Amino acid sequence: AYLGSLLRVYYGPDSPYALFEADTCSRILDAPQCAEWLPDRHAFPKFLTHDVPAVLGAVCMMAILAASMSTSDGAILAISTVMTRNVLKVKDTESENENDTHKQDQMNFVEKMVYLFRNSLLATARMMIVPFTFFAGLIAVFFESTHALGATGYLLIVAFDIMVAGSIVPLIAAFYVRDVRPSTALVSIVGGCLMRIILEFSLPKDGYLLFPFAGDEFLNYGTVSSSGLPGFVDADPAQKWNADSCEQQRFEDYTGIDSLVSPAVSLMLFIVMHFVNKWTRCCRALDSHPLMQPVVIGSGSAQSADQQQNNVEVGVEMANVRFQSMSSSIASSSNLDLEKQETSLNLVP
Picture 1: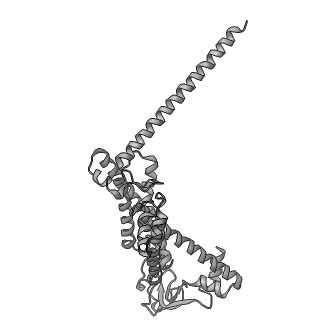
Picture 2: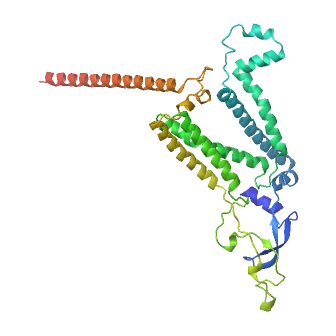
Picture 3: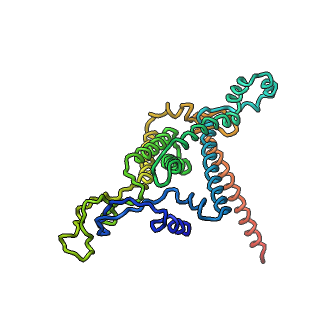
């Protein structure tokens, strides 16, 4: 709040750097002719580079750069890792072969890169970083937007929102719902992400973050359509302007509706597909597809859905056996304690 107040003082409507759009009107101000203030999107960088001490401004700019770099490199690393392990299914067999070092010494550069791409999980993930970084740089340079949050900054927010909209329901269901099939999670993820993308482009968003409520206070400035005097001026009524002649567009921004509707759609699709897979076998072929198989940590191979289910059942049986043995041991120890107490009571004269 303090920083916003400073920006308002130095680059607000009362500052010498303020910009206005003339020839506007407003009903709630009863002004047939007024000027709309245009906020400066670059006020904060200008404030740090021109109005604060040089050392403080440099520290703040470096902090912003560090935060941007940590966010971008984390996102690129996550995409590269997911592509390598979950999509390409690279098997980390380089360390399992004792003759790897000798083989690589006899290869040229291209053969060595191909060998590492097929057999080294770490090397493949590092190589996948290069194309993703290149495309991310292209987007950062050439993407343009008039959104109040900026171009690439708004893209980052939308990207995280799409990820949350599609993955939050399957992620929670993986811990609290039994017998969830991969096809159920896939339909839920795809449905939630698609709904978020569709609503991003279909819902009106003017950047003011105001829902179109009724009332003149939720009207934007209009174009001048009258040369009369304002209503608060003491003059002949015939010389005053007609407020209804000012055509103003209502603020209309549905930001946030898309973030709430998309997880709800994902949840609905998850429930429907869960019961469809539970009562029928329509998606067994999709569940057995190689891309739908989980990756076992520590091994490059993947297990089928039936093998995974068998492992779960074996684990449940082992847990039941351990619980029964613990229950019997507790019961036997309780009976022994009761026998000791009865014996001690019988020995009392």
